[in-house]
Image 1: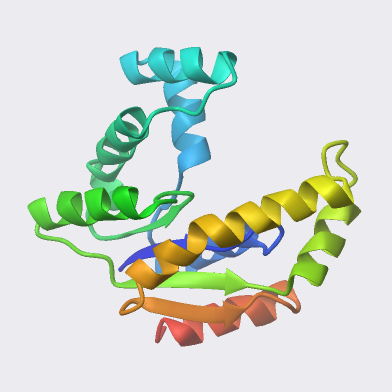
Image 2: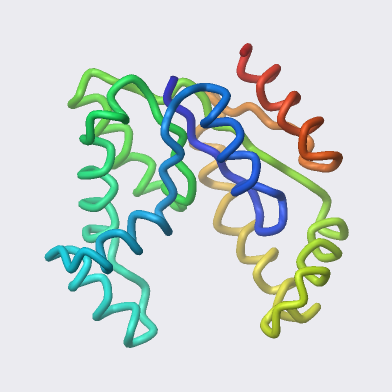
Length: 181
């Protein structure tokens, strides 16, 4: 099974993705982990990405896409994967579709883990991070909504939305049920 997980910060994507990947017996592939692995290993792409990150710039799509392509080509991702953090834009989604098609594959589902903004705000404030102010969180949520809406529309035929509010095991069961597992 090839699944993409999306949702706003604070929705519990990381927690649910790890559990879901374990339950589906597929690797949880996080772009954050891919970046860290490439930077730590000093790969050509990692060195390039680090230059952008160190200067506070976004890593260009070409670099991110190359890292994702390399990770998805690893043996453990052959039977399936749960992709977390990519794609974030429609052009990235189109690139992913083309990559998978070239490999005779396709996404089976796009799982949207959702929660009301007031719940997300409360969860993120509870983390106690210095950059988690009401204003900063509100800006990030507004940006998420504006950037993600086109992506969700792009994946409308594969989109499965679940409520991310509740106990971890309840949300996990909703996800497995939604994916018919």
